[in-house]
Length: 130
Image (cartoon, rainbow, N blue to C red):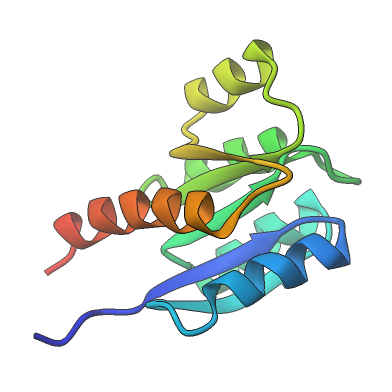
């Protein structure tokens, strides 16, 4: 059975965090198709590339992750947006979920947690697509 690869955009203002996430996904069934350093760039690149999944930092310059999440979900309701944050306070989690986030990855993250969260998002994507 030919497994479809899941396309991902990574949005984080920290170069090291993007590199770590990219490294964790290498060799898995994911293709990192784009990256963004701020929320405005994330909205732009997601609009152009239409990935299956966005890994989005909550705290970013220009537009924070929740603001970017709202804009992305307004135009692409089926994209799975996974919030990446060092702050798991209940307000941030609740606001993200209410605005359409599919999951959370808490920094500092480990590969098993990241891959498990992405596997859940991927299964939802594959159920929707032929």
